[in-house]
Length: 103
Image 1: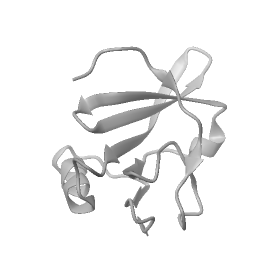
Image 2: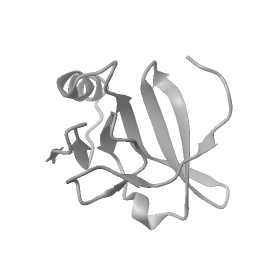
Image 3: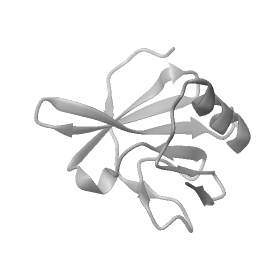
Image 4: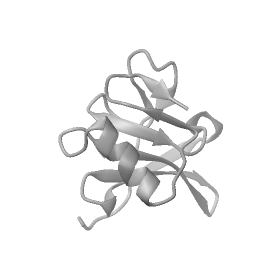
C-alpha cells in the first residue's frame, strides 16, 4: 500500500455516465454515495488494495466514503465487481471504464 496524504479530488465525469464522478476515464467506479451532495472530495490512492482508491466526502470534521475507484490497468470490470462482492460491498451504482452503469 502506498503511503502519503489524501489528495483533493476534482469531480470529473465519465463519458455517457451522466454522473459526476471522482475518477478518470481509466477507472471503474463504485459509487457508495452521491458526490454531488458534498463540497469537498478527498482521494486516497491504494487505500484498500493496490489499484483501489477511496474517495471521501468531507463536511467539517466528518469524512464519509462515497466511492471506490479501480484502476482499469489492474482490474477488469468483472474483477472489480468480484472484489466488491467478496467484501460485502454493494454500490449504489457501478460504472465500468466504458461508461456503462449497473445498479
